[in-house]
Length: 281
Image (tube, rainbow, N blue to C red; front, side, top):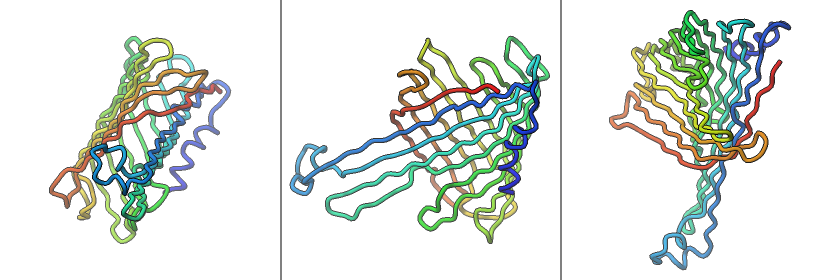
């Protein structure tokens, strides 16, 4: 399964011809990093100044987001996007009175292939059926839990290729989850997803992307399986020089597992430095 999904973008690229419109879209190569160094915190444990008794910590996250996109010559009714998204982040905390701890705050590898056909085009906004495939995994295991291994295929309808609405879709999903070798589970779900960009002015762009996925059925019970999952990112990119940008972002994840009574969420706010460009073939 891994090999098949990995070969999808490679095959599509190789089968292109001289008349095809291929674009390598480097959406973002980004680095988010912050560091706090606190010295002699033990001497200031009773200080009313929080900065003098805080924990030393390093926060690092790297992101790579790229798509090899095909648009057929002429009206561009056919789209075939093949993407690779990778993200990894760690937080290292050094309390003065406890051992150092390290936590992963992001770990994702996502291979995708997305086919769409426009049956309706109004002023650059295209509407049509879409078919998608994805393989979702991680770089490393975390706290003894196996690496996530999920394959998904989906189909539905999408709006795409507008200057602002890059992708807006509703699909039905079949997911095969083989994270746990002894508990392979197939699932069905419905998903709403989006990717929207708005050029505020030259050198300043706002964007958001994400999805909401609602699981409808499972082939078996595993407490860590999700009932629903919401993930959203909003960012502002300002050009520094050339293809390098800097800007604030907010990332939000909220989900509920089948075994949990409460909903879990994760909110990250920060500033990132990015490299963004496109290559035409």
